[in-house]
Length: 94
Image 1 (cartoon, rainbow, N blue to C red):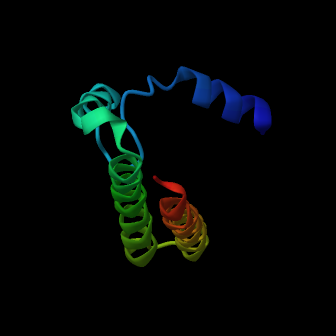
Image 2 (image 1 turned 30 degrees about the horizontal axis):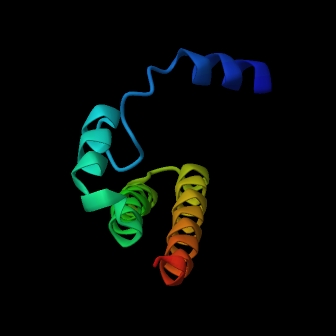
């Protein structure tokens, strides 16, 4: 299974981030932040994580297969964990 997963993963182009934004677009947005302000970057990352959370949550709700729905819900919960970690990082911005 992991060989198949690695083969599939390695074959992906990787041009789109979790939130649906293209990598080049995300990099351009990062360049716009004045002196790469920490809080702006965290806000940007939170937006990406929230979009991913929302996508997986909706996919879980709309799934016709309970196993798939549970898998999407588990991924959505992981995205919430990412958002919590980012929110905790805000206090470290100076």
